[in-house]
Length: 238
Image (cartoon, rainbow, N blue to C red; front, side, top):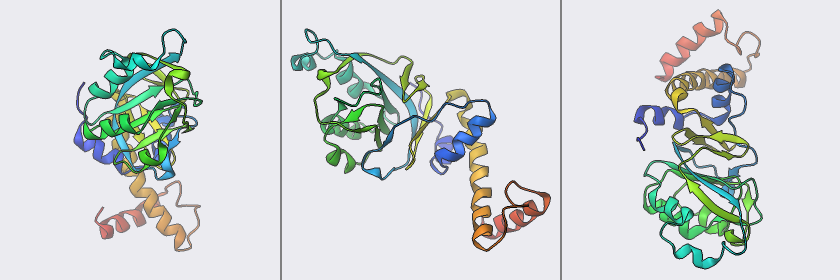
């Protein structure tokens, strides 16, 4: 899979998921923020990277046993060992957090392989350890039970649903303290540019509001506020 453009990644790393959802809404995309998916540990370390997908279906007792993990072609294990560096492993767990999508050993392996983040709409086990790892991780809630109780790893590298959002391989996943948004790959560069500019202006607006100015005539922008913004931006070197 192709690596992400560094300039686009840098811009996306500096903007919020809230700003990105506004940019998406302007383009008619209303359902790109993953529902009930939260940062493990609540810290929300920034995450940016193309999606690498893994899909789970409901487990079946005669197939989903612990010995199945010994198979090198097991989709979960294969996803851990083949997710490209700089990408985000995104798992469709059918929003079912009653059993874990992965645990700290698998997530540690992703760290060692240079993966940019890991996301599931189910749950992770070993969450205190995952929260301490150097990787952004997002899930619905902690879940101690082992995965095969409920989940069968079916396939990798296909379109999935995660948190009620359609995620296609290569879509750009951005995460922060509020959650995760999925950017269609073909829109990522233009959205990054727009969101970057929006963020600079909103930082200006925040400074204006904290100085006592009304939002009327400032947010949204007017000719007068744009003139003040130009002076502020020059002074800030932004």
